[in-house]
Length: 321
Image (cartoon, rainbow, N blue to C red; front, side, top):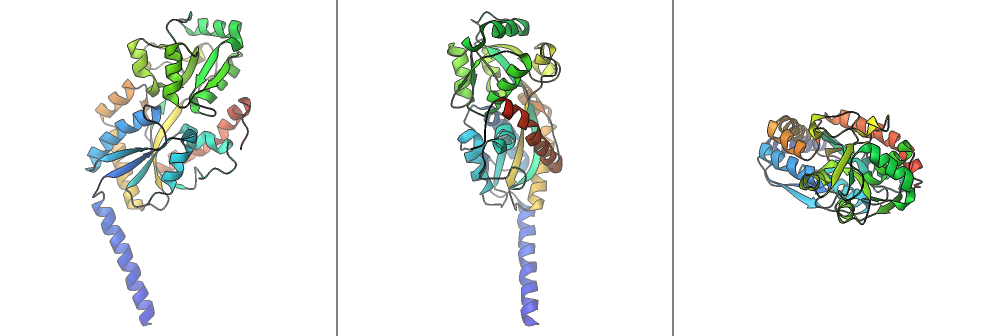
């Protein structure tokens, strides 16, 4: 009997300690695991959100960039982080929705190995060319790619990256051809179009908006289903390639086992900052639209997308390793 009482007391002590920790959370800086390189779309948006989220939580959020293998390296590190609320993970399309189709032994399960907090943005992809190229609109791009085909290089952030699969989806939907040239990251692929080394790319808007604004790239269209004030008068690619839509998303996760009170605290703070006019303005400047979801909505969205991406991966001729 005494042993049973002692065990019960110990269990209550642990629960009480966990509750007290959750109530006082956070008491120190929080690490945001960033599975992508500095300057990438996920990094750009993650830094903006982290600054606002840190203010709401009363602690600094430190970005920890761990790029590699299309985000897989950082996602695995995030999965293995201490589940105490002081490691969060900046998730995006490539590592969560695309990677499961490419790796038989993916070191994490996108659905089961994380605690979901919430999605915070949808990021359209921009169809981009160098201003020196002889195309000024979507119709001219379509004719250009039809007549020159594989003479044109399509840059991407790497094999199976979001920009690669978006490009393949566009090539298939438009009935055109181009030669795929993978680079090491979104920054490098966009830079190759700026320099004229590649002819075109279709990449997440946050990775290119400032360059478009500077005049070093020309944006021809975006991947949202219809025009949006977010991108002013830029047309939707679906206006000339009916039915085409292929956009990304960004959200927050935590290592499995992170206490639910802490998850609720971070989730509530994310909802609060996501509704602030200042954050919405900053994300809009990057070409991203604030879209807030609760944890389980976010999990369902990712599960649905994993199923939907299968057709594009097949069209790209990619096989799991």
